[in-house]
Length: 438
Image (tube, rainbow, N blue to C red):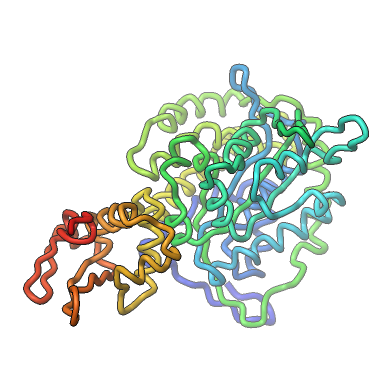
């Protein structure tokens, strides 16, 4: 694709990259907007789309919803873009969306923040008025975290309440802060989240606890990359004179009072067919991340529908949502490929992957400022060795033999490594260091 006045070279996807989403994800008004922006940016169209849907849902608030029994699914959604740092153009994709939404809704910028670190801070930002306290001002909040790894780190701290508060926020439940000095509650908070992270960071910060408690599966993961080269950039304002900014503003205004949406008869039949497949359990970490598939599809379909000013979720809206979720599932499998669920093991593996000469056991210990106990390092290294993602060698020194680790090939798991006559099979913990034996 060539943009007048520039040279645009479309880039091939790297090996093992997930298959692209079906074209029907770019349906309706959302698709039209992305279609106009796409030729003028190096960013992945699916990154623009995912953030556009979430940002629009943040503006809409709780005035539109889909009911499932006693549960209301509102237009708030959580999405994380996964791609290489700097090269994936995650920030560029957000810049287009931020400018568009700021024009469509004058208060958008004031309700967009970053810096998630504690649950208390989140509740305080959207708190209800109480006495002389005017409250947060607006229950709608969009949190954009360009360094989402810091959020995952925060949720792993023992006394941090960020994870349970975010879980309740996604569910649409009232949020409450119980302290003696500044108690606060948010009865109608409408919180949406956009995060950016690299695949290595995601695997390094992945916590089995956050998978088990349902924190991470409240996020839709979308793999994104640089899709074209624009040496001189594209049109800096591609939506000007397109009429789409006005169309979006009008759709958002109507959606705020849309009320309950239901499936059209055709979409309802398709939903019954898709529901069983979405409900099937899947193995592994990627399977755990997909445990809320039905809820995510409903919310995405709701967003597609209200942006089209529809008062029901039609077959086109449901089809677009299902296709976007399919891509999210492929993105999740790609992002978590070979991940162990042991965050310490993943951090060690990330360090080994960037150390061509490998690391000694002492250097690995020093990565964590000697704050990780030896048994924890033993277990993490054992996980990597067992799966073939790290290889151990014994290096003869003037004193005790040194333990040297390097990134391994998972396909070679179980193959022994012999150095200086010492065999260390990677299919089980090495006899020294990893097991803690003297």
